[in-house]
Length: 328
Image (cartoon, rainbow, N blue to C red; front, side):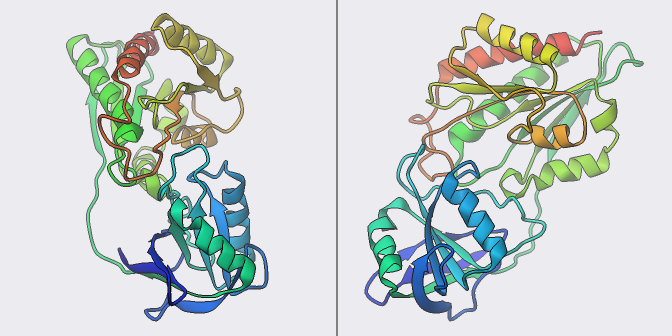
């Protein structure tokens, strides 16, 4: 639970949000000279992006492990996403590391980069408290007509930062449509549906589901991962699959549905999103996700960020794909 989260030089101050897989600061904050990331300065200053694919994000993760700074101020770079406060997921939520990191919006870059270059004195406050709460996964099971067939699993995350409209709406809508589809047309295989919490906190909801059902990684016929952003106003989607056969069938379904601008993750390469948990466990999967210029920002809201035409087309493709995977 964040408390006071800001960086100040006495004349300027700006609010931010801490990384949740690192520690907080003491109540009085951490003060010291600022400098570039990896320098000997007490306060490191850097640009970063909302995903680990951004070069600044990779450097930030490495420097957090090296322990160069007492605190770090990370400025949203505004590359590949619109300027604003585009925060990172807490990938190491279960094993926090490094110094406190305060994430601040793009608009702070001129001041803070100059402060870092000049060795200005900064105070970073990133209060993190604990508050007991409950979160839940949501799921159901539609029994197949042939009990000896291995099940199909359909999963989607149901949480993310802020309102996360375009990030989550595609996955949740197609997940619900597949429940409706199989409820009215019984599949041959049993289909297990799970919508998981904690996507932004290292996939803790999916980890919980897999702890309860560890056998599904090896015994499920396949997993369908309905990931982030494929219903956003972005020119492309990304399709991922664990085999050449599943790659070909999924791409064909997407193209028949009229989807263009399809990027692919090469078969065998570790995929993005929750599909990586299945990949790491040796399971079979198909997966769709996309990009989003409002990614991880408060401005990811209806109607500006959502493409309903594409959402409908992806729905059609994945009903076709799920029908095939749920058969014998």
